[in-house]
Each structure stands twice: as structure tokens, then as C-alpha cells.
Amino acid sequence: MKLVITVVEDNDVAFLMEALIDKGFQATKLASTGGFLLQGNTTLLIGIQDPQVEQVIEIIRSTCAPRKKIIPQMTPELPTAIGVPVEIEAGGAIVFVVDVDQFWKL
Image (cartoon, rainbow, N blue to C red; front, side, top):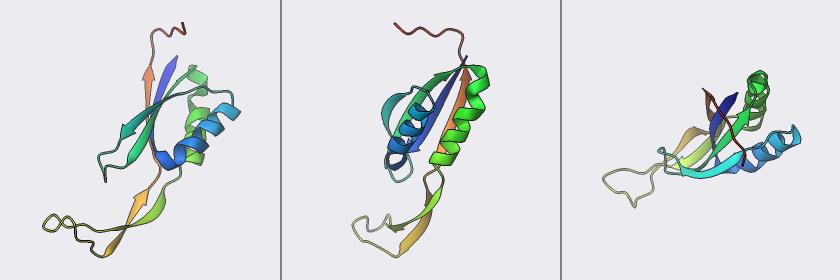
């Protein structure tokens, strides 16, 4: 048995949850905050059987694709000043796959 821990942007989580449910997977949703830009993220905990790992990763990959985003640049010297817009890569997902010795649904 495996535990898939995935961190995605809040903008992607509804689409990902829908895609997982459509394929018969369940997930536990946890609110979290990212270190970069301190934007909202969501962490999903997905318990699955070993042969399902690739299918779940493919659902995550197709639902949470990276994309370009324009944000205003802030400077440490003048944190309230808005500078020249900067293009960053947003979206995507961080995925951990961990072995699980026991799983109980009580």
C-alpha cells in the first residue's frame, strides 16, 4: 500500500479532486501555505494500492500542469512599492509516494 502526498495550488485543487473522484480515488484535503510568495496551497493525502501509483500520478500531472504567471515585483527596501511585473512559473505539483505498513479506516 502507498500514501501519495501531493501539494498543489489552491487554484488547481477542485479540478484535481474531481478528476480523482471520477476515477474512483478518495483523498483527504489539508489547507497549507507555500513558502514561495506565501500563496495558498492544498495538500492531498491519497491512500492507494501499489499498482495504482502511476495512474494517480498521471491524473495529477494532467490536472496540475505548470503555467506562466505575471506578478508585481516587490523590493526588500520598499516592500510597499510595486515594481516591474515579473513572469514566474506557477501550478504544477509536488508529489511524495510513501510506503504504508498499515491503513485503517475506522
